[in-house]
Amino acid sequence: MKRFLSILLTAATVLSLSACGSSSSSTASSDTAVSETADTTDTTKDSNDTIVIGTMNLVNADLIAQYEEYYENELGLPVKLVTFDSGKDVNTALAAGSVDISELGSSPSALGLSSGMDFKVFWIGDILEAAESLVVKNDSGIDSIQDLAGRKIATPFASTSHYSLLNAIKSEGLNENDVTILDLQPADIYAAWQRGDIDGAYIWYPVLDQLLEDGKVITHSGELAEKDIITGDLNVVRTEFAEKHPDVVVNYVKAQIHGNEILLNDSETAAAEIASVLEISEEDAASQITQYEYLTAEEQIDFIENKLPSVLKNTADFLVEQDSIKSALSLEEFESKVTTEYIEEAIK
Image (cartoon, rainbow, N blue to C red; front, side, top):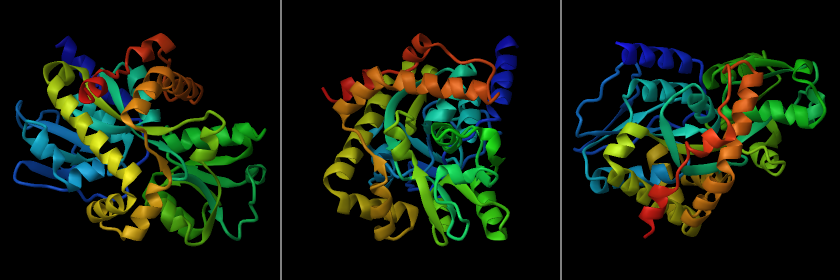
């Protein structure tokens, strides 16, 4: 009974989470892999012998694995793919035990771990560059961060974009109170933009692409990363599942390594495969690929061991300041929540 109450409390805590979302809701499927939109009210998986993989259809190796049906052919267990629109939904599913492995933004990862959730970060899907950007209307009269004073800017709160927006404002000497910052989800941002209710937004694809039809970029996450304000999309696994099926996690990592090799060495193939999954043009896919940084397996190990705990700690401290969580884990505690063991095993 106590464990059940604990799960309910954790799930309630993470209902406030949010993160970068998907470019599309399309996923690949086969006889052994079922793709569906997430229903986070279902707290049980179909079978103890089925691995449930969460995807946010982010432009990284996961999409290549989907296209090539790597998961269903190589993981060694039947696979169900579940599509999530936000980190909030991923964290709710993780708390309920209804997803085993999933993509998750760095902000909701820091939030979930600091809220007591039991998962490990074991792979970095991508480091965000221009894929998340601050966009303003062409006729807004805004040409710099300083020009945001007195304006209305929207972003999903507790997301990687929210984290980047507030740090961008701070880095240019403004106070967040100088700007009216609105908490809107991606679809609502586009609607508010069309109505003229907002002057700009810090957001990701596909809404970012829609705003750029009559908007311009003021700054993006790649520029902020140069100031050590780093955001990215991570891959996480429930600790209980990882302990029971370490071989599955290793094979999942092999899929990501394979996908990154294509992204880094054969961009034409990568664009074609990603375009097929997302149902976008190969030109659009090729453009989006250039707006992320992808790491080799060796680079992953170095980043996870030497940078990622600090990235998560800085993000969690920011979330405390924003009253999104009551307290943050210590740096040492975050170090215990990341692991390179599955990468090291995958490259042997």
